[in-house]
Image (cartoon, rainbow, N blue to C red; front, side, top):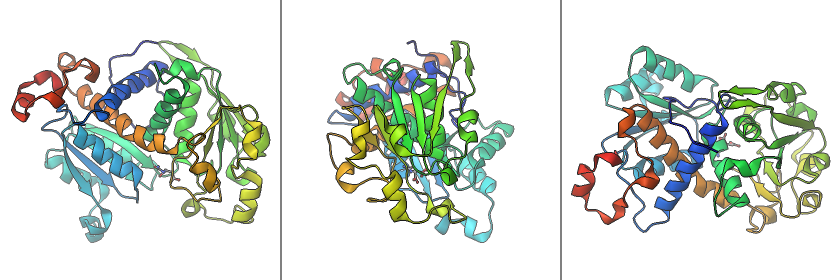
Length: 366
Ligand code: NCD
């Protein structure tokens, strides 16, 4: 599988990502995993650039890992909290973004409860000719690209720790169980997993999994690399979805996004759809379990499974998040520069051995 020169200024959705782009993100993230395993976990790649984290909605993992990723790349970071910002005085979201632009921001990471807000900011910045990349860190029920990409890295690392590649995903069965209707994580994962050749089996009560979901996400992906047939199946009972599954992704019940009573009770949900050790009998013997967090322990998954390192990839997901977000910031940062300035991190010298002053003069690392 070949990788491609990066050309996306913004990452707003994975709907049109091609297998080559997934492989590029994966291989770049693997290089950064190497960086993160060193004693000095920092490279000067984005030195002098400003990354603004505009989180208009609460977040623990995503926000912290974007901040750490930017810092590991030596960028300056700006963190925005809506409660203590001028939003409370009536400033608009676009004016907030323009304020960060005027301060010299090079990349904006945006999370908002409204679907499409990162895209609107990106459109406005393009209209202004700002040359600033926008990364969607979760917009309403729409998408959460960096979560799906860190899930991809976690899955590929688990399938082939020596030489992970998206090729290893072909023909694998991934069951996604839980509140699919409200989940941006499920939507982004549907795009990425199917584009990489995995079969995705969705399982939820009918109120949380409309029939149209399978159709909407089954459209073939046309790329210059060829056509990819996406394979999506829906199940209103969990056991058939779990049959021979290689991976099970449990999703949180997103109560904050439920406007109606969509479930009789959490207890009944757990009885019918909760991921338990007993239910994993249906899966492949080496099945691994993922959860994007935050978790309602004992509802979508039992506590003992969450904490079982033989089965659970939850900690690996969190760790993968930093490397993947470094890769995305690196690729997007580079996409704004002339192509000859870009050098993959794996080909760069080990900057941990250098003094800060020698890092400044090494232009291939910027
Ligand atoms: C998810 C989100 O915010 O969409 N969490 C995350 O980013 N790790 C999933 C969720 O909130 O359930």
